[in-house]
Image 1 (spheres, helix red, strand yellow):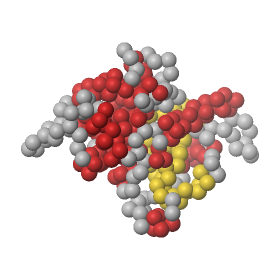
Image 2: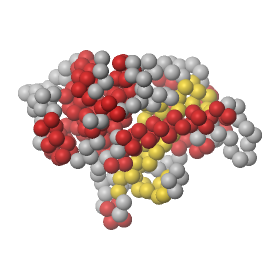
Image 3: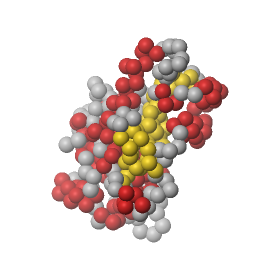
Image 4: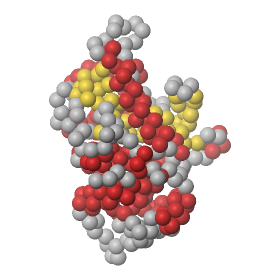
Length: 297
């Protein structure tokens, strides 16, 4: 099986159609099915189109064979925002259908998702109350927006993810994520969670230990060298490379969302695109599991 965009979209369409079992609609069904809508959204993220208007113009000219009907921009935007629960479900379904689902080594980190830049825009933004000001130590900059928290396998396959105000503590957000997916964590034994120093806290580590999760992180200056720390630097680069895939190849920071629903679906769209690429590479036996190069043209 080849690894190109058409093959990925075909395999993804079949997977989605099998999972949702054909959505039932009251009255006349839409001309663009849910399966086609999600595949269209994944293709948009992989091909790097930030503008939905430009994307639909491109799709009408180059993808009419795969998508016979395409809505107008307003209709596409409305359908896409309404599809957020389906997109979140499919991220989990693709992870479960890969060889990485049973991996007990997880890596976690958070990365900024800027939403607005100017002060007047921030004051009148629909995201006020959800987004906030934060600081990105990696790039030594302040930003206004959200933070994307990602828990994934070393290959980059997303296990859990969440968006949160940057003023909320990282440990607090991660603990809430583990509460939401408590059954998922309980199903596994001996989870090793690799993080950076931002998650350092004895009470937090004890809380994770009660869930059967061991936290592996760099030691603080006042601490002795922790167990497993010499190998930690190489592993920590994995989560940085996952964030780079989301930002460098899938343009996470150029999401263009201006409302709660708009930001949420655009971030989920990019997480799904990465998960779909990893899933398809795993299915086809590609040498580099997280490579998206074959799908971006």
